Every structure is written in structure tokens, then in C-alpha cells.
Image 1 (tube, rainbow, N blue to C red):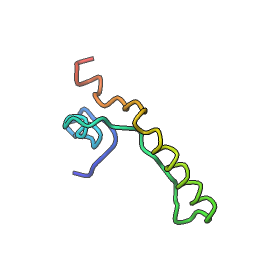
Image 2: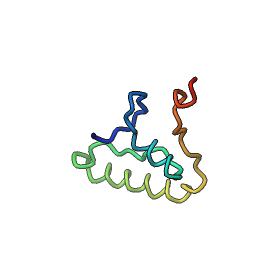
Image 3: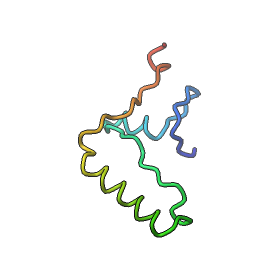
Image 4: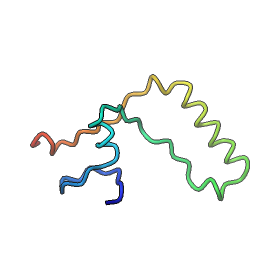
Length: 73
């Protein structure tokens, strides 16, 4: 079964749902689109964005991981 980031009620376990179940607090992803095709300046901006996020990552709120269907809502 491939990992998915969606919550599906058909019995599939999502990656962030599985992490949440194990006690992890899951944060929003840091996405950098197509760095292999980006210019040097764009890649530097991507790294700078990641470095800036890491400075305050402990203050971030986790994303909601428990789907409403889990509680019968």
C-alpha cells in the first residue's frame, strides 16, 4: 500500500495519521517545488525559507490528524 497524506475512511492508514497514532505531533509540510529545475537564486531562497522555519519550528501548532469520521461525525 503506498503512503498517502489523505485521510481515507476505507481502511487505509495515512502517513500523518499513522504518525499521530504513534504519539508524534505532525507539522505542516515544508514544500519546495521542483528544486532541480529552479535557478541557483530560487534554490537559495528555498533553503533560506527552510532555515527560517527551523528557527521557530518548536512554536508551530500541529496539524489536525484525527479525521472526523473516526469519531462517527
